[in-house]
Image 1 (cartoon, rainbow, N blue to C red):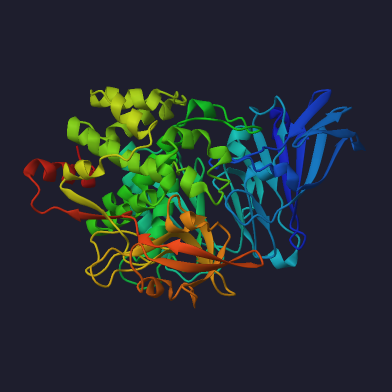
Image 2 (image 1 turned 180 degrees about the horizontal axis):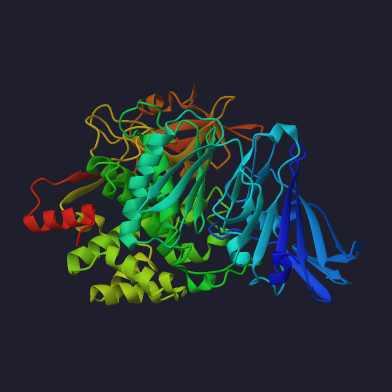
Length: 622
């Protein structure tokens, strides 16, 4: 009798059936099934708060017992009843996989990748039983050089990684994605723990250098929470692409997608912005190994994978992580203070360029993530705010508030949150973070949280930055590429990237249209958002309009700023657009571009107390 049978494991087999048809075949075997056994596929994947309904990718499903077909009947969008099993139940599904993101499953002639939520049926009432997974090698000769990368525990695998793996239960099974391809890789240790950096896709980068930099970053985070880390191995599963970007956290790995030019070339000096972006993504997902995979809202304990799991705490986990992703680039020594402050100013600029911050609270943004953040509409910038970006702003503000008013910091709060909840496997109650912060700091923070989390007014960041000897200003942007930074430009100011504004030529404020846009390959600027109370909205322009002329002169991404320089604040001009196939002309009154671009500057003349706070904040010392 096999070991699997003696343990009565739930067993899965994954076959890479056909790369040309993008089909996985996944088999579920259950001993001693219920007389009417329900199986279902998750509707969402932890870490990405949207009902993705993975069952829609099932193209065929069947059930058998003792070699004979039995009845399998669909109960709802993602559940099936299997009836009449006599002994072992075998359910086999064929699943179409062509989702190139980090959240689903993908299979073509170049690579295969999957998250368990896309493939593995949940056997009702058997979710807590131990699991074995057999991954069969592909038979297609085009896949002959493929290998396997995953953080799941191997039991009996060949030199390429195909074979048997084991997980403690279904929750762990779906928390170990698999990369299967002819990837490049390098291994390194961080705080004595083996780490594996895997990169699939076409790229030209120095992986040894990336591994060295990731080692610094990982060790800084491990030391922040305390050694040893809560995993005994870790995998960065990466894919280099032609422009996509994103990541997803897991308990002992992360899936990262980035532009193939983001990695540094061999011999390339410094850390250019593209590489900073990659490192920030890795920093974010690695921090999540503590702060969301283990320290998580009580609403996620356990995950209910067939429905929305509402919580008002997503800002605590995604926002605070977004704040620390940048702070650890600095604290690990990968970037200097000027770069850190530039990136911080750019993050703040993204918040100030979103009018919806004055309409939707951070708590409501968290609660409604399922139906707003992941389903963006043209009016989203006017009506909502991201709990990532504003959450990071509030994390910054809270950190500076604690340092100004107490002997504590956000570092102390996050570490205590880990010790009290994450390390003990206890979910954080809805009021848990706020009460813990007040307890750790020994001060009343009710007014702060009422304003920052449940209110919609801007926080006094200038005052908070002054307490650590940093100057904070908001100004119009200097041009389409101005995303904020350390210092204002020497000449002129302007609006946001991808927006319509001009730089001033004579000291006057630049002009703006109050829109965001994307350039159309066939000419013109397609309006992606029309911002509240801006010139374009007042004139009657709409998202989707294609702007082709101002004052009856052709405009495009290259000449828009120059066109706007010709006019003055309050001047009325014509705006010509295509709305669908209809050519329309509107009277548009120009106005000064908003002061929504942040810049930060170290104050050399800050007093001694402010400088001491600044050093403690940036270095992470007590």
